[in-house]
Image (tube, rainbow, N blue to C red; front, side):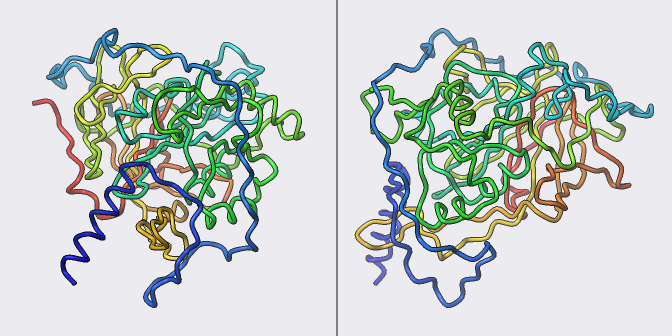
Length: 409
């Protein structure tokens, strides 16, 4: 019995590492399982992906990348903690040329009249998917656990239009929530049967972009087929035009922004999140007041530009992670090797905000379905983001020991 268990666990790791994502037939849930997702709807077969002419994604050689230096400068180079009252951007500041997702004025205001797009982007295996394309053009990125302690990204493209986005992979249960938060379309390669049912029954079903629609293409690269799907996002917006869904978003509650750091911060120039199969690290660059991204000890770059990924804000979101035994994500020989994970980003929970070389402890809240994740401090006052892009690091509620924060001293 013990040897069978060892073989089973080995098979799980192998299936996840190889990126197997068939459309499985879910196994009966164990008696102890609980399901918190909305009731399933009748099975609808996923769309058939039709081949498009090969196209080579724009990429740069890793040799051209200049990594961010390590060790980093002393935290005295970071912004000094402030005790002055913080001035938030007011509602009247958000005119037609200011992006509600970043707080920034934009060079192309017409971009803010189109539908945001949430795109599913792979992060493993590293040798097949890195460097990814387009991530530095996203206004918001969520990194979350998938199966096998690996992570995957959901990136929100709105104010900028990258040349390429990818590699595009399959959706997960968290993608039932994110499009609602940003009134966004969802672009992905497919999904398990259970997730597909929920997407097709969702309130954003009419603005889903499937892999056989305009914008998607195969690179023709010599690697497993599931890692070769990319997209020209201009095609996505054309597809939304054809669906009558390329409309300005109707945001719910939006995040607070201020160019001035709030009070009560502590120096934090290095943040590392150990997801067990991949390590996500951010190091503060005082010259640009951004955090620079590393993955598994290597600088993570945008393949279209060769620039190391950066974020003005990094937010660690502690949220309940519930295994949904009714949805199988990886199946081999009629045996489910990996069930779906529901990351419950509704209600409230702990949050750490990293900006300007400092960490601020607070609470995230999401009351209504179309609300974003709103950050507040210990007094219930808005905890503002720095103007610019934001990466959300989604972690389980008991993940403190997997997170390392350094002051640089």
